[in-house]
Length: 85
View 1 (cartoon, rainbow, N blue to C red):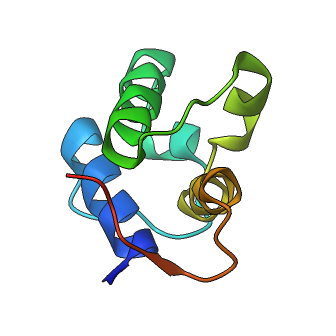
View 2 (view 1 turned 90 degrees about the vertical axis):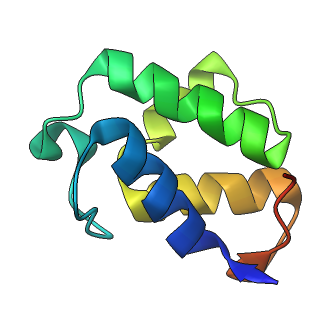
């Protein structure tokens, strides 16, 4: 079991080329633009084998919101999951 939040933090940091992704800071405030947001969503979909609908994109605004959405998609009620590699 790995920590979902830390996996997402690393994934988002890599795409955004940021050293740090705080839990509750809006991605737009970190300089993450809509194109990077699309890349982040695509990477989440690939990594966790989930589908994020257009209506759900508004939920991918902070690390914590992104984690909650992935947990909901995976049907997990806890902060750790096994990620698909």
